[in-house]
Length: 116
Length: 117
Image (cartoon, each protein chain N blue to C red):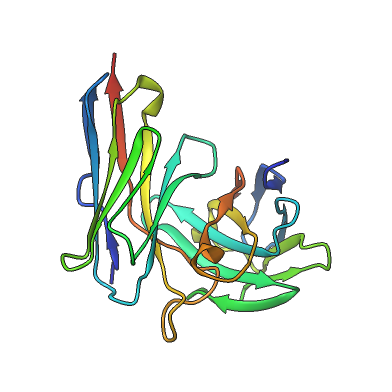
């Protein structure tokens, strides 16, 4: 079974631009979560999508948004980029079933975003 | 407010010996705990998990222990191998009403494990 894939793997943008990152979950997984990893803050939860609906959201400004498509693929968008948005953005999928294993997540390799 | 803490930034162990990685949490709503391993330039890899209704879970060389009263969990790796050298993250979640809800894992800051041949 193929793992979680993320594209692109590396991205360089300038301040004020916007960026869209893509995530394809493991086949059969319906939940997709996004995380930001920085040296200072560690891994921080951005949001989670299930069946094309955002079910949970972390403490990030509205410049960070996402969506999920009917095939469970997800995109994340960051508008008006700031220098502090430079980070590794990780996508994780889980099957989304009942019970505690709902949050047993499998991660993609990440997209390294650099904002200049 | 760091709800999941890994107080040891690094750990060095000899090959063949036991590695013990520790994790503390403060949120009593957490009811599911996971350990991930991460190599540079890769996403975290799921290792093992434990529900709050258990105090131990084993999978091959990996065993996770949970002490709910102390809000403490640990990951034991026996025997340690050089290929185990990586950053290890403890994570917690809650699906209880009023908990952190769906899709959100709260991570510790990680412990760098180095296993020497």
